[in-house]
Amino acid sequence: MYKRQALESAAWLLEREFEAAVSVVHADAVDESVLKNAEPGRPAIEIED
Image (cartoon, rainbow, N blue to C red):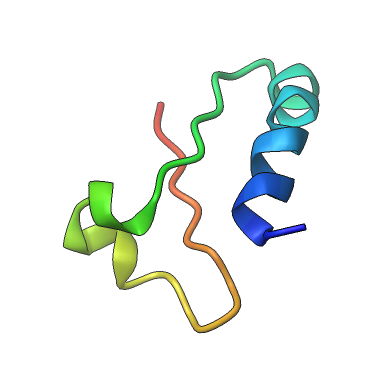
């Protein structure tokens, strides 16, 4: 299973646990400010209020 697919499959769990909306977005669709937090093999996670 691809990492993105795994995150998409687990989004409901994160939404329920943290009572927050979760979006899994491809790197091509985010700001450079989010990408700078990613590392090879590790996704960037952005938390908004």
